[in-house]
Image (cartoon, rainbow, N blue to C red):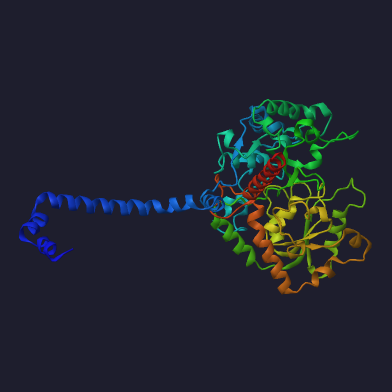
Length: 471
């Protein structure tokens, strides 16, 4: 710009026109406000824009972190009441010898264990119930209805849940003069109903799962054997995944889940308080055994252990013989025995598994296993991967023939080793209990959470495999 133009730029007329004429100021202010607006809107949108510009993999990982149901959602079938609600309402007929109405109360948790006042810490008694070992079906059903990742839209579902109380159903017909047709009737009706649902055909039941509250053999009648139902072998069940309290290790559709214990925490605080209580417990017995005999079984190992424990010198073992109702609802003797013992003996139950394994661990006692199938390979989603970190294995044959001494084996563990093993047991407690809070605990995962997350992972993996095969 030449000097003449420079002078004109600062001449009085030009200066007045630019800086004192009102229209000029309005224009300047408008431009300034527009610039400020653009700065703020651009800043607020910059994060989503940068995510959109990122690679697909990076953007997906951000979405997963923000979505609590990124692993999947579950659709729960609304079955006709004959398959669940009617069974609970007719609780007097669930067992040929006694009423089960107490057992099915409180959503399957059973009646409140008020008798444990003074045994468990103050404030935790409301979290304790007399839970029966075969009541998992209503427990899971009630919880899944309130699950944060339940969906009412089947199109968005990763998994479909069938709330059929198969264990309660067949439990009415296992004894006395009932026929195999009686045991299979409800199961056949259920399969016919579910196969008529439109989403069954999406994978022929491969993205469906069910809870079975009894032992696997109660649903696997075969050959000339008259025991149980053939539900698991029915054609319509060949792809359905089963959450079951005892699995058959060779059956990939069986997923072993913990038996219900009596502790059903209401909050994270309940879990932490109970863990602290069992950690600080003063234990006066080296080991214990609580159980009843099986007179119909030749060389009953339970009877052997009761005798061994009762005759053990020095009071190192405490025995509780479960006769009549001594170890049933209303008696705290088993819990107190486990709380007072470093180790608890866990032979086979009515089959290989045993609810007592979980009752024992809940009390912070270290389980002693005599058959590997009692725990190992049964509950892989829930128990530590290294058996020796939380349990002791002594082969039952060695105990019988005298080549292995239970007391001799257990006395070899140092106090520090026992402390470490107990800590691993205590660490496992949240994974083997079912919370009573309808929507689960705040941040701690319980057995239900682990089971459902495992189902989602299994179904997602299967879906990816099918998609890859089809592509």
